[in-house]
Length: 82
Image (cartoon, rainbow, N blue to C red; front, side, top):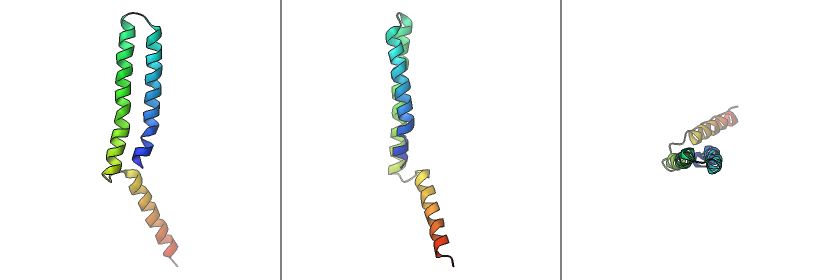
């Protein structure tokens, strides 16, 4: 579950990185190189989200799954109550 939700910040970071890279193509000089380096760093930072989402999902440490299980257990209690 955490892996699926990690695609939201991934999409945001990749979009920002694309626009930084696009803007860097329009600029000349040293600022162009800075823009390219910055966009590469943004793309690398974007990879952190699915990596950590996969780690949390596969190690069963995802807080979203814990919350869903707690809500389901509470719902089961209310259904069994007279």
